[in-house]
Image (cartoon, rainbow, N blue to C red; front, side, top):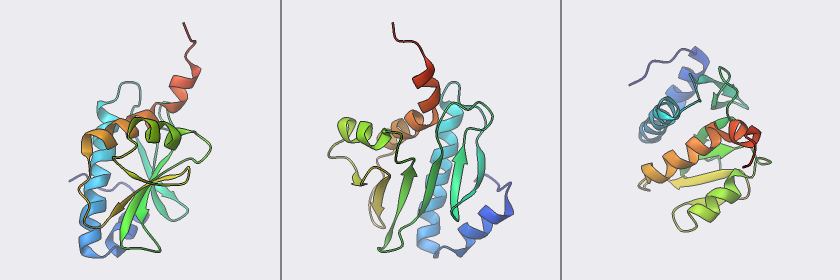
Length: 139
């Protein structure tokens, strides 16, 4: 398990109910692992934005922020993306039946859901390379 560099983020994880904490910790590992395996992303910065664990590509500026958190109104959790990035629209086209979506900003998981790791890893990689892909000239 990856150590926390930010004590505020660690406190947020400690405050989650144990079963949900395990799910979110596994999701956190997937986030870091995806960034490490995705060319051009670099080291992620883990911080809090709006009180939610957030993952930024500050080192390279290659992508948009990804946030994870429990759902406020239900028993589950989510991966949040910038609502104006268009990423959720891309994910819906790629994986129309794989995920449950919330508007233009989130992929939702119920507490008992199996996380489709390969597909979610692809979505995370697209988010972490969002800016660098937009900058590339089209051939």
